[in-house]
Amino acid sequence: MAKSIPFFRIEELVDPETFNQYGQRCWWFLSEKALASLVALREQFGLLTVNDWVFGGGYKYSGFRHPDCPIGAKLSQHKFGRAFDVKSKNYSAVEMQEYILMHPHQFPHITTMENAEQTLGWLHFDTRPVTTEGNQDGQREITIFNLK
Ligand SMILES: [Zn+2]
Image (cartoon, rainbow, N blue to C red; front, side, top):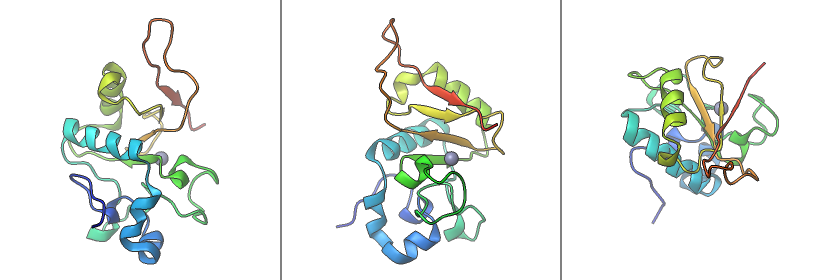
């Protein structure tokens, strides 16, 4: 039986080239921590879009990206299955980012986000390994990086 998660089908989480090649085996390429974080975000914010190519939309590269994909950085976290770019109709990327930063315990695996002021309306989060387990107060810090 194929793996599944609530709310999302595999086509929403990988690019079409990878899906056409691997089908349901694409689950092999996605980090459990990233998937758990995506579900937690969906539970908090309601409907979220990652990729919508399977529904006729234009987003193809917001989840796992094939190693040969020219979009984004060569060793982007997307190529490790640890990153998703999520879009909401009800919340701006900045609003979602602010909520995550205010409630980090709700998203224990998110380690890094792109500055949502700089993206084109999506929230990039990833679960890349980091060495810090928390600051001196025991609070986990989420790194925000700037695109430029
Ligand atoms: Zn991204």
